[in-house]
Length: 165
Image (cartoon, rainbow, N blue to C red; front, side, top):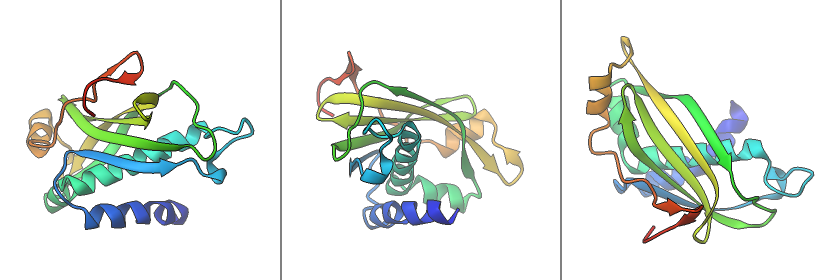
């Protein structure tokens, strides 16, 4: 847990300083030496960590965290699916675009796309479930607690961003 906090605190501090209500998080990153595997590209486990940084930035910037905590609601990852399209080599600069795109019953869908320019290198689709004081929130309560937090998914065709990002 301590190493998680050490890695995540810089993201939290930056997001807190920029708590602007934006519904899209865009984190600029670089593949670090400690994140590569023997094939000299970013290790597959790091993609999940990077998506978590994007969700952390999004939840603070959008002010969802403040709202949820005041209501005693905790978001928890219920499902995560990552598609690896292109490798990210050591030293490569990339962007993590994260946004909440839909509510499906009791789950909030949060998408993170790792981009170099307009090319998609990986896509993370995470579904969050919400725990309240009395247990898992019902679908109508999830709709209410996520009201005003959704945005359109990033437009992607053939693993490339189309239109304005």
